[in-house]
Image (cartoon, rainbow, N blue to C red):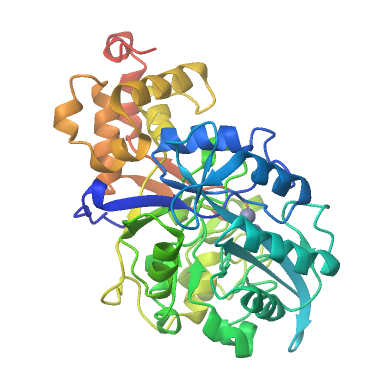
Length: 430
Ligand SMILES: [Zn+2]
Ligand SMILES: [Zn+2]
């Protein structure tokens, strides 16, 4: 279990940025993903910079031009919330192509643009090459390295980041459709790639096991499709706040830290066979010759297995100079565990709202607030939950073969006591 390094720089020295989200113009995305809602939701979370998502979509781009006004260099703000979070122009595109010995390579990339004007030029260049209106995340049929070439000719300030690099489908290292190295994928364009998005299914410690990735800045974003998921992963940059400052930090591997999901929660973290209820670590899969020990069918290989295939270092290795990775559980999930109720229940949602009203922004509560100072105001079990998450004191049953991992902050005996009426009344919230 990773234990968090809590010697973080002071809150006023950093800003938190989530650089990959989607608008309602992307498939399977909430209707609420609009600029006004994003501004409010990011503010409640304590995100200082939030990606617009989907600037390649013509209708959404018109909205961006209408609703955003310039703030610090390269950043924007929602007109009606001038003190609110800053927006950075972002898009995600999907390239599906043949290269080398494989057909059907599928690689997603995140694009960040330094201004609305440059974003407009990108849209102009990409429009003849694919259908930008079909989806907020458009699909192109040419190699992803060509995309890099097109973009860097438009502006050297455009940032291209391979997205969620380990997911089995649609990613740079994906087991089914990817490559074994950054160089194999981007070839002569490799020097223009300097950051990689680790995605929800991997964290920096997993990526530190590949010496080939040492020169890349590892970024973490939410890839949110609904407001509640904003900031489930994020990046802490040193101030001052500006697009050029972000670009410099991404080029020089100079993030303050990243905020991570526990990768064990992902649906394909470990190996296994769902129909037999078999969950295996990669070394166990190898011992069983890749076959389910119950039925003998081939096992579904997960992200950790793929990382180990390409890794040249043992687990636990940390290259010097790499910024810390802080693993968190979203506050609403801590509340749900503390109350012993589902995340979607009214009691949990209400308590979560009250916490934000009393305690401030979510990230300040999770990362920075002195818990002793606020323990009077909050139910003891929630305070204890936050403390355990900070210290990495929790149990996770890893996800496998399409089954999500399950986090437990409290042991079953502790959970039982919460449902007793006397204990329940301590909350005073529900
Ligand atoms: Zn993607
Ligand atoms: Zn995405």
